[in-house]
Length: 179
Image 1 (cartoon, helix red, strand yellow):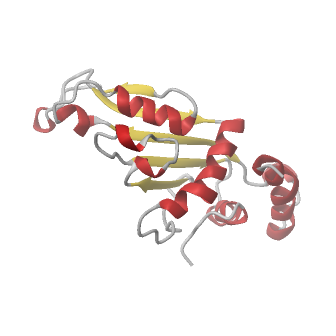
Image 2: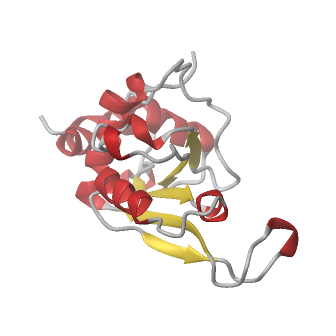
């Protein structure tokens, strides 16, 4: 059974029963997943061509990232206006479920010294944010082409404003939280 089908047919109905939700529109749902890769240090270290990182993120997310530029210059950080600062990808629907399945079942066990994800990483809108130190843990990234491993910030946007319900949804998906 595919991850998306399991999510729709088993996980959401069981959450309705478990959380005592009367209206099925109130059940928490995953809206999107956003991947961010900071490339400012890569640019500052003398590398002008960041296409390697762009291609790596495209391989991880199955779509090309958007390059975000600095909005204003900050001289203390050696940052100039319109300098590329980070890469961003927003995943929705099938790509989102495929990425989440791969993250939970394949990639997170590959993290060196993995101690599970913290349950305190929910933001003020109760979305789950976490950081992966090296993007090379994804099996799609060719290991011989790596210039410098970069971190990857992942945000799971959940369409409900209740921390306990959102945490219950991620636990039902078997997200690797600390015990």
